Length: 140
Image (cartoon, rainbow, N blue to C red; front, side):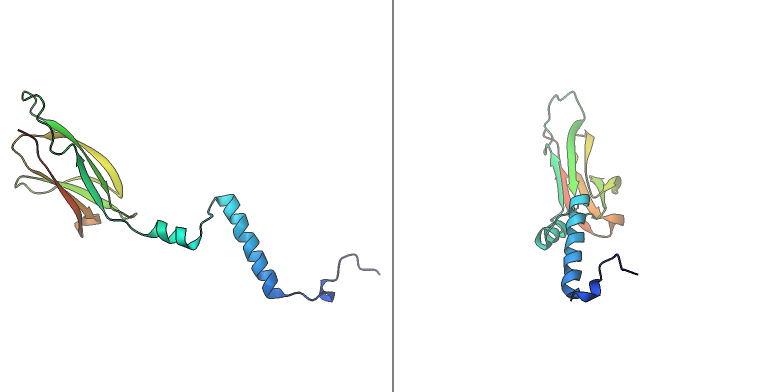
């Protein structure tokens, strides 16, 4: 009876080299299919957290028409990582009030009054740590 398949045992195979080559082919295939082609430096840069950001625009809120008692500002935040952040506001001496949650976002504040101080605070989730704060006022 004659064998129809090739007898691979007759050829010397460097198994370590073959394993590396298979790993490289699999990694390249994954890169093409999933679009996850990153070298180690790029991956480390993506995972690195940046500084938290909390800003208000405009700030101070323009007085505009004095007959309009409420002004508008847009609060923008970013925790600097994928960590969830909690946005709070403290108006004058009142207790903090929860506004929004997320790693980043914007919040339009349509109730900025004259003669008040608004302190917006960005905390790590559940107010475990203050990440950033910004004070907002309205021009007289």
